Image 1 (cartoon, rainbow, N blue to C red):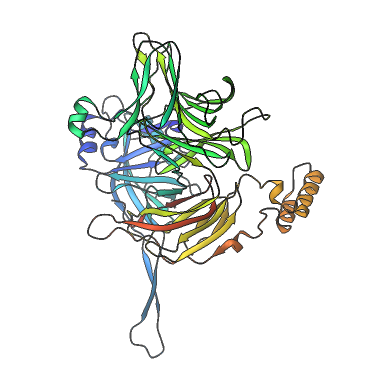
Image 2: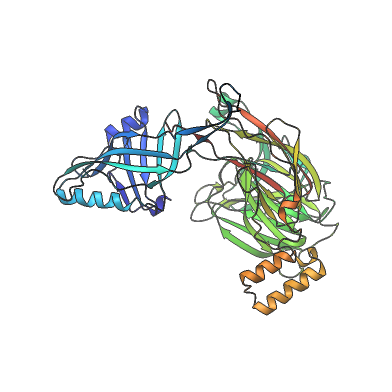
Amino acid sequence: MVGNIRLRVPSNPITPHGAYYLLSGKKPNMTYRSYDDTAVFHLMGGMSIPDRHTAPESIRLKSLSGLMAPWAQIEQKGATQDGATFIDALYDPIDADMTVIATGKTPESTAQLIRDWIAAWDAKKPGELSFFDHNAGRWWAPVRWTRNPVDKIRGGNFTTQEFTWPFKAEDAFWRSYDHTDEFRFGFSQLDEEFNNLSNWTISYTGTGTGTVVAAPQYTGIMQSIFGDGDWEAKWSAGTNQSRTAVLRRTGFATGSDNQIAFMKLGSFPEWSIFDEAYNDIWLRMGNTETPGLNGLRLRIQRFNIEVSYFVNGVETTLRNKLIFSPAPGETWGFMAGVDGDPRKYRVLRGLDGGMVEVMTVKEPGTASNLGSSYRGMGFGMEAGSGPTVQLLPASIRSFRAGDNATQTQSGMLRRVNVGDQDMWDRYTLHGPGTFYIGSGPGTTDMVKYGPLLPNQIVQIRTDPRKRGVVDLTAVQPSPQELKWWQQAVKDFVSFASGNNASPLEEELLSKFGVQPPQGNMYSLLEGRFSQPIPPKPVAGPVQQYNVLVRVEGGNADSRIVAAGTPLRRWPL
């Protein structure tokens, strides 16, 4: 959101005095961001200190009250009962006031500063009030202007004006960044960490020299400090000319044409204005022929990725895309055979905790090779020709691959709550498959949802006060997944409306069971979530909890993404 900011108060870079407070943590930072995200006012802390000579305009906090929401006890009392029975406690909105001092270089600049401040607040659209300190981290709440100020705002007559500003946060609590985790299928039919390369068939092309070797992750001074570390596949530099290596796992083939591979990088690929180095993932390679003659290739460059297929050594490029540079520790994934289409390919990138799709490619025609003779897998490297030395591709820490077949897998989601309130998770389920999620941390009781079809995405909210199931599907099921009469109704409505169905027609589609084909999405939910993620203990460190998950009938597209928002009563 930083790119939207047009006004920042104070406008000067941080001063030495402010840097001292920011780095030492002696004062927390308090910031208000306007409802349209174009203005930021630093009210307290190191960022709020103005440069008295070049940019004296500032709005600084003098006093603050009401940051903690009030609450009401819900009790029940019998006709002959002494005392009362506690039922619950419900929090009201945060209703607070802050007294601020607006300061400008001239009366005119002070008046403009106050106009900007007033314009940044709205009674209907919430802005963001946030606090940050070294101990608690960053906490914020959406806030609205609640009533007109009681103080006299004196216009452009003075260079300093003090007034009290009322605001309200309806959510009752302050929130921090979501804690997220992901369960995704692991494919370990081939799991290589490169203790050696004896199980790989290697083909080299190009005029240069240099080879792919298995070597310790650390060398030199780093090796003396950390030891060898994990082993990697690295390029051993040769003459300053381009050279390509393609490696296929000897004797390995998947059981079907649907394949998936993950490659974890250990360094940056080198580049210059003259040339650059590459890292490749190869799928559907010829099982026994020279590596690189046939197959699908994902090529990862410093600022670009490219998907191609090879037939008898002839390359056909399907698509390329600009990217941010690959980074050490990052994992890249390549899938062949997606959504029931063997000629649809997907590229993923991310860290071990989660992967995101960066490109999908549909091959036109049927030129690339399929069948049992083309089910080998591997990877590649290409060293570039630099101005003085050979440009090295990134090292590869691990290579995992397998058959993207329907299967059942289990695992755990790691959950952490740094707030002082219970955290109710949100689970986003990506089909296909039937999903089982623990009803709470540490329990073996499972909530079942599904089955979901490929492309279907559903969010399950565990908070009993919220709507439980939200359909997030963006890609409609294929005709093969719909009953013939459902498809007929869909075709008729599309024809009658020119593919511009009215709300009534959309409702009719839902009644006929076309959106979604399973019918009411609530009908797929069995069980109830019974326990939230507990808050941070009053004394002691934050605790980690585990939630059991299982997916039946899933594949590489199946995943569960958990997200929870930590909440607390006091932001400092």
